[in-house]
Image (cartoon, rainbow, N blue to C red; front, side, top):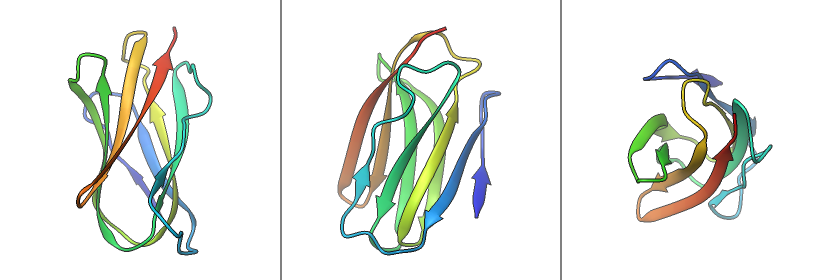
Length: 109
């Protein structure tokens, strides 16, 4: 399925790309990087869990919540549109249970 959510005028989407059960949690580097204005990244969930996916600016301020719900095991792809955000370094974080995975990305306009 696909979930679209935005809280500041940009768009984002989460798509299930494989229902095969991954061996471990993972968060891939976004592509393209640097990006303008949108980018994609993949993440793997090995078991059903409440999953939160957020984007933060370089000062640590949350700028977007892409996902905050129960997801089944599988591989997912997230699309992040930063049309209304300024150029700079951003971080995206996958959180579930005690696990937190974070990657850095660069928006260049």
